[in-house]
Length: 290
Image (cartoon, rainbow, N blue to C red):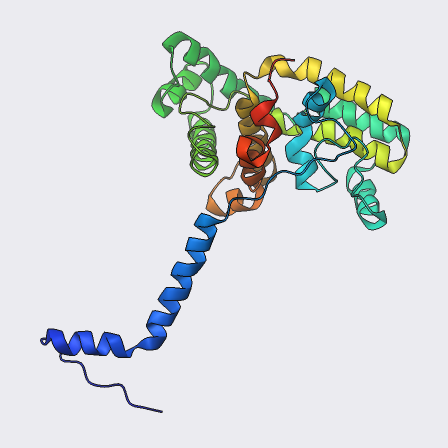
């Protein structure tokens, strides 16, 4: 091995000469710079729908409600009601995880997701307090204001504070990653129902792949889900934020930190794709109001 040349820290020429001689350092720096330059230049991948099904009519609009869950599995193009990418092994895992061995179990799961919706009543109450407070204030309540309102309603201060911290952390991370132009500063989590609703739409398509129903029936189920669910949200971004928050809160049991968000909040990338017009995102072109 060659000994490193001595460097006189008091001599600028010696320091510059030493840096020039460290070619391996510059090679690493150059490779890293080239990598990030390529990422910056190359456009993000576009969303690819199925050519067999529409991307612009009412049926496309309705199935787009399941975009995040369809992509999360994944089970096929977002507009494909047949979940055509599910192979035998994927179907087997799906059946076992969800307990949808029969048509009755499939329909029961959809019913559960569209009614019970993975709800925890205390979380529902905390969010309801926030919504009511926002209506009175005409703006998003600050954490201290929200906490005080919950305590005034008889809520447990310690439990409420942990919940508020978790929700505001999720909002901050989603806004940072998806973009403030999509998840605007005035948008906040009002319900966690988006997660279960997105799953219900996806479940309707999975049932077709599993042979529990046909496309017309799945379309009818998806339409009913949309009619019932959409009034609770103001936009695609509102719904997407609810989906991500619902997923993170459910699987982390409300214990949200950087690690749990990275694991369960990874749907933010699909959220951004869905809401970006240059990437053919359906949420960027399809109207929220049916």
